[in-house]
Structure formats: C-alpha cells, structure tokens
Length: 271
Figure 1 (tube, rainbow, N blue to C red):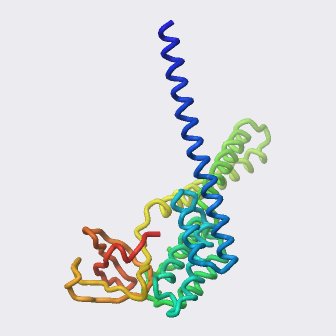
Figure 2 (cartoon, rainbow, N blue to C red):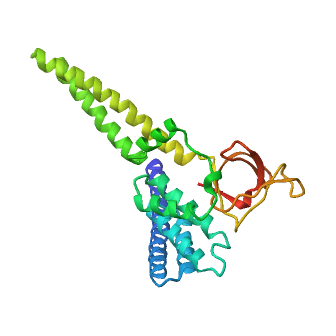
Figure 3 (tube, rainbow, N blue to C red):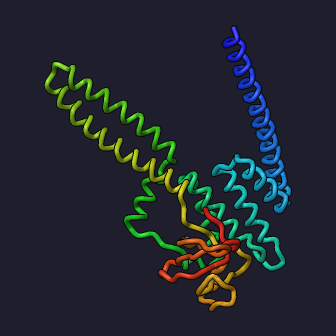
C-alpha cells in the first residue's frame, strides 16, 4: 500500500514539473512570436533599430532559424545605411555575420547569398579565409540540403537498400536478382555519402572556429595579447577569420594569407 502511495506521489510530482515546464515554454513561445511580429512591423515602418532589438530578442529566446538571421541581417544593413557615417557602429559586420548564419542553416537561401555579396562589397573581405577548389565543391554539394535533409535521405536510402537486398535474396528470377543487387550497391553508396554530408553539415553548425570582425569601422590586430604591442593589421568590419586559440580577453586569429595576430575577443563573434 505504501509503495503505491509513494509511486503516486512521484507520478504527481513529475506531472507537476512537466506542467510547469510546458507553461514556461509556452510563455516563451508567445513572447518570441510577439517579438518576431514587432520586428517585422518595425522593419516595414523603417524603424530598423527597433527591428534589430526585437529580432535579437527572439534569437536569445532560442527561436533562431535561417529566416530570423536573414531578416536580422537586413535590419542591421538598413540601420547602417541610415547612419550619418554609414555603418559606423559595426552594423555592416553584424549584417555579414547574420547573413552567414542564415546560410549555414539554409545553404540554399539565394536571397541571403545575394545580399551577403552586396554587403561584402562594402568591406575588404578579400582578407577573409578562402576555400580551395575541392573544399568549395564539397561545400556546394553538401549545401544542397540541410543536415536534417541529408539525414532524412540517408534513412530513405538505407531502407531502400534493405528492400533491394531482400528482393535479391527472395527473387527467383535471375535478371531481377541482378538488377536488385546492383541497384542496392548504388543505393548503399549514396547512403554512405548522404550520411557523411549530414554529419559534415552538423559538425559545421556545432563546432565552428570561424569568426567575423564586427567592430565599428576598423579594429587593431596586435602581435601579442596586449594593447601596447605592435599593431600588425587593421581589418575592417565583416572580415572573416579563423580562431586559433583564446587567452583571457584575447583571441589569436589567422587571415587568408596565413598571417596571425591577436585581437580583442569582444571585437569578433563566432558564426
């Protein structure tokens, strides 16, 4: 009897905690939806600072997606254009940052890619890390779909391979057995590559060492993690670099030409 009572109490406690969690999540969902709409309305009214604040809030609530980053990038770009000195407060860097974030989540978003190219024309992004031919080809192919898209295709191909192998084992017709065997091999081959693409996209999202310089106008890169050390470079906002390591409030970065230096971590932001 006591066991049943104890089990009932634990069950009620779990239900209560789940109810609290659901209410909490529901409250944030409503808040995110309100902020999203506020951001869109502000953008339509050309109140770009309000739009940026609202959309940033949505991202902080954990509801970020490619569309959010795309709209946020547009808002930052428009905000920067309105300044007396265009992009004087780092708006260009933040626009490029969010265009790149949108493309990481949805590489097929052509509008984001087009706007990113326009934004890059305003900066010296020639200093950014380039992609090799093979790396570029790999990124292009794997970018056809998102990580979830490749994962779904992998499951479909795996099931297809199993069905074809089953047909090969059970069929009494020689020609059908041959066809099912070779098609199964091809399906298995595609399954392996789609799985690799899925893992590659997921890894890219979860473990990125790429950052964007978002400081206003230009920022100094030093020879060592010390403001009094020699300034070796002054990249403009929006330039992408690779983070090598961090030390206190400083990050060691690498440019496209291989030159390394130290930059204040607050001046850059990871994709």
